[in-house]
Image 1 (cartoon, rainbow, N blue to C red):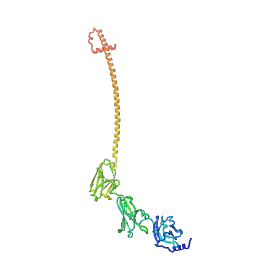
Image 2 (image 1 turned 90 degrees about the horizontal axis):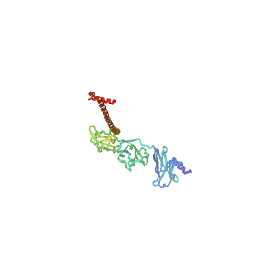
Image 3 (image 1 turned 90 degrees about the vertical axis):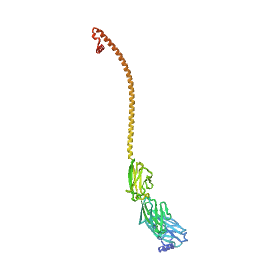
Image 4 (image 1 turned 180 degrees about the vertical axis):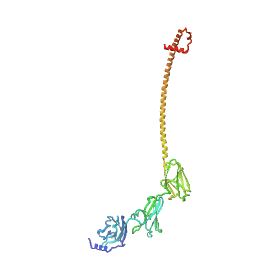
Length: 435
């Protein structure tokens, strides 16, 4: 119930009658983040209840107590050894800013400590230092600080949210080396530097240099790092024809005239191979008068296609190299492929013709054999016919002779016909046949 004690407490709060050994505690937090409010108390109060309240600290104003350590977005923890209780407020909004009270419940008048909470936007900073570098290089980020922070804890993180920077620190002054990062605190110069080695384009972005302060927000400075693609004097595309020579031109700065020149192959300069050392088809000629050298490749092959780097600086400093994208035209192989197809067609045609001719020869031989057989039969027939003819001829001659003789006998009185001529013999035969 509302007793005389509660009435006195209200009057005391209104009149700022707060018993405190440390005065007002100032706390600053980031909107959307969390904040911790720590309050100390004297020896002898370790077992007493502690709490955090707002406004007049009435029953409805008490936010959290050690008797109920979690309530809504408030959480309280009592470190009795250090005699400090800490209240954590999460999910801060602008209306959370203002006055709070740390209270210790005792008999009679509670002990109060005033807390002033200030909230600021979770961003940094008005001034940003810009740093630019290239892939594969090392770069140092410089982080200045005031002289009173020489011995304070330092760190660096990625991004631009101060509220989470310490939790996401890449490296700190207590752990000076972490993979590609190294932190050096130059106290006499009032700055610490963070060196990043073997840069990649993914290292580009915002960084925050932080100096921790125990009683207030940490101090930050912002850096914007841009890592550019390592590039060259120029980048060019070249096309060669398989089986033919190709010459690549590589200009270089005049100050590199006496440097060793080279051509290497690979998608990235850090992993390319020096072709002049392993490929006998390459010839390198340096022309110091034109500040360029040429590389001739004899009989380009299909596997010669790819990315080449020709340079004059073994340290691979920017501006001393040429990036060449070589493609190989395989059109020549098509030219050779067409005659091959035609040759196959011709061979097939020749085989077909040969087979046809061979078949005709076989057929011809068969015909000749049949003709030969026919001729033999014909000869036999002819021979038989000739024999018959000769036999008939003898009969004819005999009859002719007989006829002629008869004719001669009939005309014995005419001696002029005794020696008759051939024509007369024929005539005789003719007369014989007519008979």
